[in-house]
Image (tube, rainbow, N blue to C red; front, side):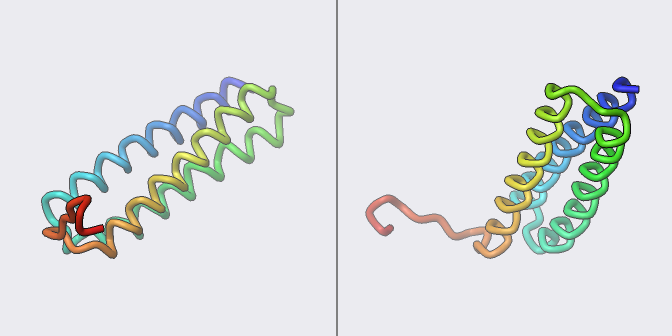
Length: 100
């Protein structure tokens, strides 16, 4: 049953990658939609992070599978944190190194 856990982890990693790409594209093209997108993507990240956890706990998974799950979980947290920070920055605002 480690194949089930591996498949769910693969879905988790694909969701994180697709969510990061979507949030980046929304921030560049339509920044007014970013707050809504952050909330929707956060729910998707949560769902795809919990499902592998259940499979990992149930079937006594290997350390490698736990490590892959942790990578996906941490990547989801970093993507969400970056998008949440970008939500607070106006789209047209840029700073030069001399100004900061």
